[in-house]
Image (cartoon, rainbow, N blue to C red; front, side, top):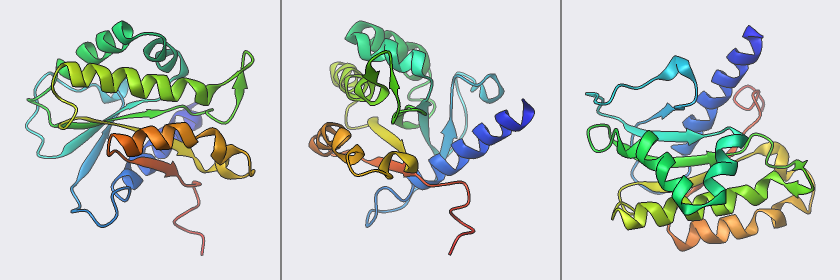
Amino acid sequence: MCQSKMRKLLFMFFFIYFIGFAGAGQESTPIEALNLHYKLLQLPQTTDLDLDLAVSVGDNRTIAKISSSIIKAETWLKTHVLSRYPSTKITTIVIFSPDSCQNTQHKPTSDLVLPSLKNLHHSLTRWGLENNIKVSSGFSHQCFKNQETPEMFKPVLVFLKSINSTFTIVPPLNFLSSP
């Protein structure tokens, strides 16, 4: 059980680490990970951090809620982001479904990612923050092992391009040690 939590934390570290590489050719900025759903990483309402923060949405239940309606997305945004913004420099909300390549209840989990991104982006636009806080998505490297999977993510990538945002492919855990 402890090893499972350690893997999750290590995975989140590498995931957020590679978000910094998502904007190749752009000015690099330090970025720190924050997953508000892990009790270990609770963030106070105000901080003196001089880092850009990415808020990660990585559990399927929350992604399902956010994708189901703009009102639920706005409620999540108010609770987890706007209550800390601008005193905490949150610049990105990353939607990452750990099993985005798998099918659940006759529907691929990846089908929840695009509506989540759109609902959060719409809410940010209503608050006038779409240029200050970007929505982004992350995909596991395992999603791209077979040939039809990239086609499944094409609508997400088209949307991210249309709002001038980034995406991240999370590498395998042994990525840094492999040749």
